[in-house]
Amino acid sequence: MSSLFTPAHLHLALNHVPIIGLTVASLPLLIGILFHSRGALASGLLAVICCAGAMPVIMETGEGARDAFFDGSAQPDLDKGGYDSLKQHAGRAKATAPVVYAAGILALVALLALTKFPRQAAWIGWAVLVGNLLSVALSVWTAEAGGRIRHEEFRPVPAPTPSPTPLPMPQAVVLPEQPVQSAPETNSAGTP
Image 1: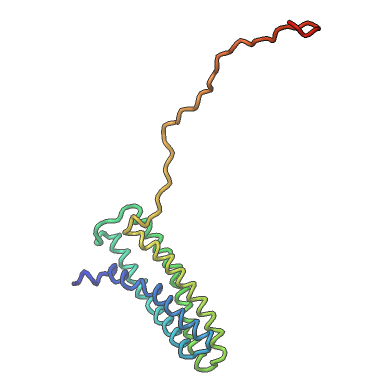
Image 2: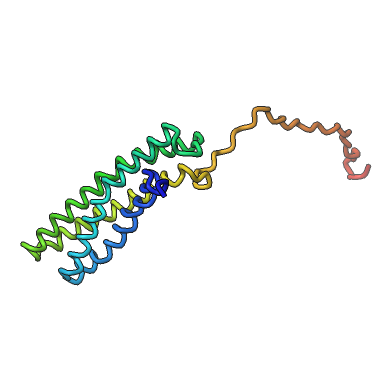
């Protein structure tokens, strides 16, 4: 049972929160903005805040999973493509996390504005929706690299390498010469 609570397992369980949660949060945000529904807008904003709040745990468990691969405690070992994908995934995660945090902070500001200035909250809601959709796109981009760590079938197929042996060059075909037949000579009357 303790093997289910390793950083790698927890990371795999939690890393779907920003993708699925923020995608689902977009619907009440949009409904709340378009139909001026404070309840829908507030629920969408709360969902964005909760998803952004999960990011520190996702980042921490991801770093723990990375450490397990590098110290050899995660088995089986990764091949070169897996290590390359792991590094790419970690770099993408570091680029994605600040955007998700910003969307969460903006959602918190919008939620506070909803209570004090309900008419202006819709405008901030649009900014939250754009930040939310950008967060979803970056999270999918990050997850794509993460999926390639253990799944070779998700990795791009390398381009075929050129053959080390040169290919034979086509030879010019020489046709035998044929004698040229001359036309019979004619006289001025046109007869031969």
